[in-house]
Length: 225
Image (cartoon, rainbow, N blue to C red; front, side, top):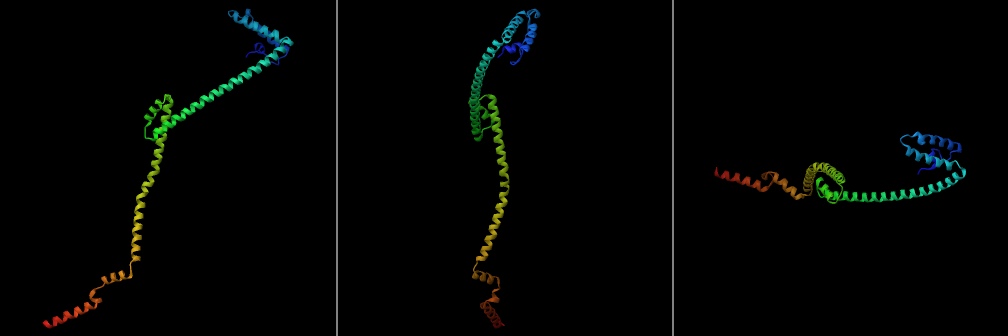
């Protein structure tokens, strides 16, 4: 919003002498006789300079102009502030709607990725939901990369567990077998241990019937002789 001060090229607090010098300088620059070939533009600008100087060089008119200008500036600033606020609200609404739509598309892509579909399927599904092609490609690429990283992490975590499982099973089986053997030995009755000892000893040396059988065999042999 140009002002009379802008037309003369002076600040609003300029003195009367500064306004006079600025007017003379501007008038000389834009006088039609000094702008051959652009007389129409120079003539209009020169007239604006004259009108500005006529008001600002008169103390009473300058005072009225300053008051009116100040009021206009306050009104303009208030209007400008309202416009900026309304614009900011519109932009915030558009941004919130865009973020919600983006989140919905990402959620949709994640659901299909969890079901095992590849990147191309995700891209096609997003396009089918009227997602812009560039955004659909970005979401499909990001979700596919995320799912691949998750699979690699799960695989890396599962491999050490699978490698350690056979050793754990063998050790557990050996431990249980040794424990069962020790329990069986500890729980066997004294009678069972005695019978086992008897089976290991020669029958002739330990049982009276065995001794009598030997003597009877010698007696029969003596009769034959």
